[in-house]
Structures are given as structure tokens and as C-alpha cells.
Image (cartoon, rainbow over all chains, first blue to last red):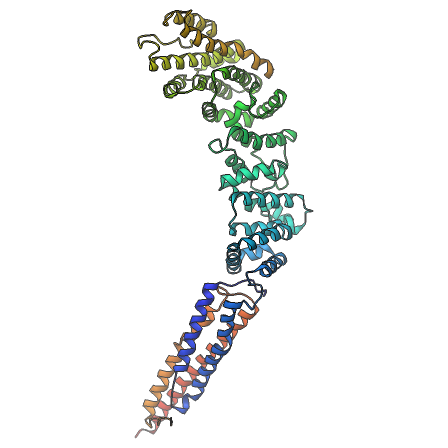
Length: 498
Length: 83
């Protein structure tokens, strides 16, 4: 058996018990000649302990005569050499031997120089899978973990496949083949900082993220953790996600290195749901061209499963829009975004009744957040919240009408957004005393009207006249500009989406 | 120091041998093979140590059995020689 390591605490306990046992053997005594053989046997055992094994154990504890146990540069290299010659699964599945390897790794880990040496050696020398098995036992900061994971998974993807690297045919079929991504991705998913840095590194070769692991939910978790809007800013999310989206776009049915990802289309929807605004035709957060944005959106809505998932994630889409600050000038961007959603999500792809309704509910729901996009103060936030909650759901007849009358659908969406903005502004004015509390609220959207936009416009004009200063006053001018921005600028988005 | 005289009473002598046998069986050295097992260290030398310790504990156990057998013989001889 190859000597791998030892447990220092257990070995110290053994030394103490050996010394005590030797003393006890010496204390055995009998004057009876019939016990002479027994006493001799006891003394032989005592001598063996005291003169042979106890010194061996003590020497091991102080000088490490077994060589490979030495925690210095030579020991590190020897350990890596030993690990390179054994079957990593056999070693890993033996709790005793693996426990000792883990103990030795912890000792190495305490010395920064040895830690670096071990990392270098294992990254370059060991099979990626064998090296990956060591990673959970090392203390790596987020940057190191990201670098190690990227290096090992990339090496594994790029190396010539052999049974040692990817396992047997049976293992491949059973998805139990040795795979560093399967070992490392759970570590990354548990550490958002490391996941973010890893995905940033792997953006240069997205297949290592999306097609290496045998368990694609692991890859999905890593990406979703890395791009969680609670942890990353808009620009970072773009740097991480766009290369992955482009990879999917280049190969719509990605058969991966390890196994086919059956849920890639729903994963795409989960990944992009918090960032749909960045795909709008007038948005420049990610520095994408209009064509690039359109291609990405087209990919997302090309697959029913992706689209369906996006509809299910309507709350995420709405919340993300509210969380990303806009200014009043961004309302035209929002209008274009709404028109894009309408053109691509509803008119082109949705065919069955259930999803038609979900699509329209999504659109109207998203339109209802328009008020929440205005520059926020406490009063505005409260007002926006009230406005959003007041949007309500479409009834089946409204859905059916929107389905058959594109103009009605467009009017309904944009008028909902405009009404949301007007309502938010009104509530803010009441809160800050700009208008008396007795001033009536702006009109809501009458969905049953032949032309909801025209009907809203008429009543909105009447409401403006009731504001202090009348329809030509400063307040009326301010809110009219916002509402008009939404209702007029949408044509740009629709045109781009077409 | 001159050796202590051994009691001439076979029964008492047998009892002393039985006590010694019991002590041989309950020595701390019998725990050592387990403590020196693969939970503590792994390799050729540790394996040799484990085997060596196991050999000594078996030898002590055999000596204990011998002591009990001798004690039994003493007791048997005494019964035969009893009037």
C-alpha cells in the first residue's frame, strides 16, 4: 500500500497509549516459575513497544520519516505525484484514505507558499477531475476558486478524451463519468462572488459553462447566482449574459460536451427575465446594436418553452423594471420596449388560448409599472406601488379582442402605461401639496371602449382643465408631456421589432 | 532481591495464576492494534506496526490461556491427591 498521510492527533494518542501500555506490561510480576513464560511474553511486548514502535511514531510526529507526509515543498510535490498515479474515485471513495489526504491538504493550506505551489502543481499535473476533487478541501478565495474552476473545466473540455478523462461508455451513458464541472459547480453556486467571477472568465468559452456538466441544473444555478440582480449591476449582468446568449443563438440545439441540456430554453428565460429592459430597442445599457437586441429577443421567443417561462416570470420582469431607475426622458425607451414585447411576444408567437391570455396579462402588467419608473421620492414610490397594484387583469373578452385587433391591443397596452404615469404624478402632487386633495384623479383606462387611447385622451384633456392653472398651466403641461411621450413614442419600438 | 517463595498450596497458586491470566487479558496493549489501524495512519510501515502489535497481543492471550490451563491442572492434581 502506498503511504499517503496520517492523522496527527490520532498518532499522538497512539504514542501516549503505547507508552502507558509499556509501563503496564513492566508492572506485571509473578514469582511463580509457572508464570515465567507469560511474564517473558509481556516483557517482549513492552520492549517491542518501547524500543521500536514508540520511537517510530515519535519520530514520525517530529521528523516525518515517511517522506510523503512532510508538509514542505517536497511533500507537496510527492503528494501530487502520488495522487496522479491512483484512481481518484477509488481514493475518494475510501473514507480513511481520503480523510488523510484531506488532513494533509489542510496542513498544506496553512502555508501560503505551499498553498500556491499545490495549486500550480495540481492545475498543471493532475487530471482535471482528480484536481477538482481536491478543491473542496482547500481554502480558496472567490477569485482563486473562479480561476481554478475555469482552468480545470476548460482543460477537461479541451483534452483528448480517454477513459481516464471522461470515464467508460457505461459511465457516460449513466452520467456518472468523472467530470470536474460536476464537482466544482456546486462550490461556485454556493459562493455568488466566485460564481460571478467564474462566469466572467468562462464568457470567453461559454461551452465550459453551459455544456460541460452532466447535471445542467448546476450550470443553470451558477449562471443565475452570478447574474442575480440583487448582487450585480446592469453592466456586469450584460458582460456575463450576452456571451452566453450569443452561444445559444449560434447553436440553437446545443448538444454539450457531456450531455444534452433538456431545459436550456426555460433556463434562458430565467436568466433573462430580470434583464428584459436591456433588450429593448432604445436601450443602450449593454452596448448592443439594435440588430443584436432584436436577434436575441427573436431567439428567446422562438421556442415555446422559453416564451411560456417568460410569461410565468411576469413578476420578475415587472420587479426588475421597477428596480432599475429611469428618468422621465426614459419613458420613450419604455414605450419602445412595450411595443417590442407586444410585437414579438404576443403577435408572432403565441397561438394557444392559455398563453395568449398570459401574454396579454404580461403586457398590461408590465405597462402598469410605467408610473413606477418616474424619478422616485417616497411619495412617488408609494404612488407607483398603488398604481401598479391597480392595473388589474384583463377579462377573457378583452384578451380575445386584443388577439383579433392588433390596434386595440397596442392602444390598450400604451394607454395603460400612460394612465399609470398620470396616476403616479397625480398622487405625488397630492402628497406634496401641489394640488388640493379635492382635485379628482386622472381618468383610468376604459378597456371596453372602441378605441381606448382616443377615449382616454378625451377624458384626460378634460382632467387637465381641472388642474390648478387649467389645461394651459404648468402642471398640466408637465403631466401631458409624460403621457404624450408614452403614447406617441411607441411607434419607434414597434417599427424596430417588425 | 531473592525471589519470593512460592506458596506450597496448589489452590492458592492456581488462584494467583488465574489472576495473572485475567490481567494479561485486560491489558491496555490489547487496544493498540485498533489505535494503530488505518484510521490513524496508512502505509507499509503502519501496516507492519499493526501486524506486530496484533502478534504480541495474540501471544499474550495465548499465555493467558496457558496460565488458566496450568491453574486448572494444579487444581485437578490437588483434587486427586486429596484424602
